[in-house]
Length: 476
Image (cartoon, rainbow, N blue to C red; front, top):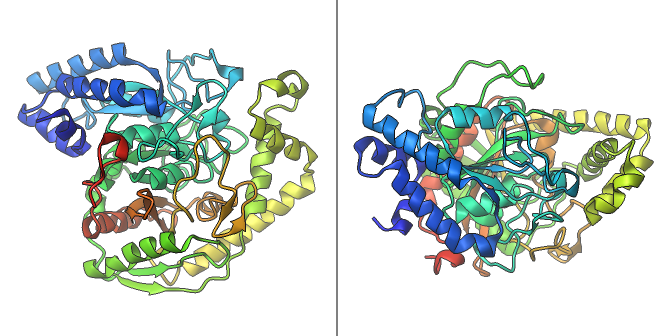
């Protein structure tokens, strides 16, 4: 096989080849490193490579496959992975995209990283993120701007943009990232890959911050079952995260199976409040209604949800300000320019403002729970437009409507308020050659149904053959 052939295989296909001894972990790593050398200079996605470690881990994995020792116990054995630069990794610089942490080297792995490594994954390095993941675009003052492999003039999204750009361009079959308001689903949609945020607490998140009840550790991959494979390795309670869920161990790959026949699916193009580009809505709608081919009942619904932007922004502003309550004047000039505005807004908020946001959050969540009593999943576009220009905080407008602050990602942040499982699955390419994502939202604790629906979309609207322009002309 050529490098291109190898690097388009799913993680599960790669593992099968390792077991059959038709491909070795070191051969896969060699192809991956060649891809890094070819494209990362243009993408600026992998910002702290750990290739010496990767060589050692790939060699150890190859030896394990040769002997068969503990292979079944390590489901990620020999599979390359990247880790977002705000997820702590023992002995590896973890800057969170901030000048304040540009030399920080953690003494311990975060729980999800620790579990992925224990499952045998080969660590390629850390991926770029905006400072402390504050926005849905990937630029910071430590490493600069990450670019989309579909169009180098466009953003891969954020804040897990570096990981998404890596996965989309063949630098590892999956990536660990985080999602506090869409930070997995935004870049998944913009990069034409799969992104999954599980039910809040299913995957431990530590060390945490003042955004505690919004933040998720989440996964990016090139297939639904690859995400399920990684999820199986990292899910489960951990004492370092007091809000992590002590649930029975689940084989999430098996949970994907079962199909969608008989499921009740709701489609909303706008949730009742979001401006959306016409072409994007049409592409996502077509993918949603294609689930009828797999046996689901799909219905377009009119919703009257109110945009929760202002209360989400209040939580973000307060949390970011809390981190600088005692040192703001000393560090202000080192902070990302856009984040300065958010922090100073946080300083102006009072306790009653946060209390009001908490009340509104509960009401918004209750309304979503009641709606999903009648449907198994709710579908929307993931993003209201295709990717905007790299290096700016957000698009100036959507469908002719000016955007302020986070309003350009209207479908994602509400699901961080509710803690529901939500995913972005590719649904096609727009006329500008850029990917469009379908947002799949499920009931809390019903992650399996979300994964099943996404797998059904993957089956009826395949995307694995589509290639970013950086790797050659995408097929239609």
